[in-house]
Amino acid sequence: MLLVLVIREDGMISKDTMMRGYRYDKRQKYSGFYERYIKRIFDIGCSLAALICFGWLYIVIGVLVKIKIGSPIFFFQERPGRNEKIFKLCKFRTMTNERDKNGELLPDERRLTEFGRWLRKTSLDELPEVFNILKGDMSVVGPRPQLVRDMVFMTEKQRRRHLVRPGLSGLAQVNGRNSIGWEERLAWDLRYIQRITFVGDIKIILQTIVKAFVKQEGITEENMATSMDYGDWLLRQGKVTEKEYREKQAEGNRLIAGVR
Image (cartoon, rainbow, N blue to C red; front, side, top):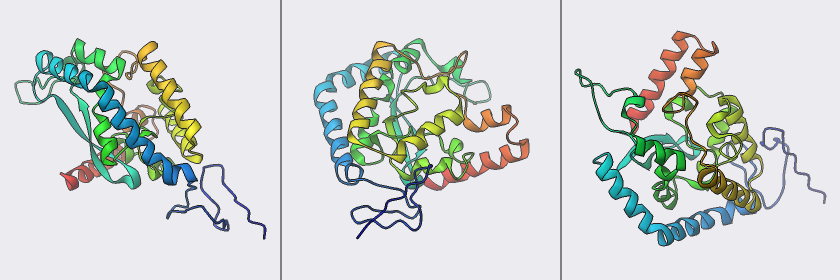
C-alpha cells in the first residue's frame, strides 16, 4: 500500500492526505515525531538546566532591577499562545512607572532607563520566560509571542503561527529580528511551523546566543524605544483605515479584558 504525504506551501496538509504516524489538528498542521513527543521534553530539560546553571544570574539581575528601576521586579503582559490561548508573559522590568499630571503613563522612550535598554539589548530581560516554558505556555524555539493587539491585525494565514507554542527565540529573531519588516517577520514564523526539527531548533538556539550575547543585536527599531505595533505599522503603511484600526484595537482590548 502506497501512502502519500502532501504538504502545501504554507505548511498545511491537504485534505486528501492520509498517513499513519502523523497527527492533524483542526487546521491540519503537520506534526512530526520530534514536535509531538520530544520537543516538550527538550523544553523542560533546557529550562531546568538554565535555572540550575544561571540561577545566580537571575538573582543578580533581580537585585539590580530593584535598585535601578524599583518594584515590582517582574513585568507581566498578556500574549497569545498556542491556539491563541492568552497567557501572561513574564520578563524583568525595563521601564519605570512614571506618569504625567493626569495619571497617564509617560511615553516608552521616557520610561525606558539606560539599564533597561541594556537588558533589552542583551535580551537578559527575557530570562524569566523560562518559567513560561516550564509551565507549558511557551517553547524554547518557536514564533515569538506578539502582543494581543498585534494578533488581531494578522490575516488568517499569518495567525497560523499560533498553531504551535510561541518561543523564546525563532527563525525571525535570527534572520533580522526587528530590523526586518512585520510581513517578513511573520513570513519567517510561518516558514518555521512548516517543518519543526531537533536539528533546526538547535541551530536557532546557537544563532540566538551569537546574536544576543556576541553581536548584541537589540530588539528595538531605529530611533524607537520599543518595536512598533503591527496595527500602527499597517496604519502608517496605509494598509488599514482609521476605522479598521480602531475596531481591531477595540477587539484586542476585549480579548485582554476577558482573561483579566
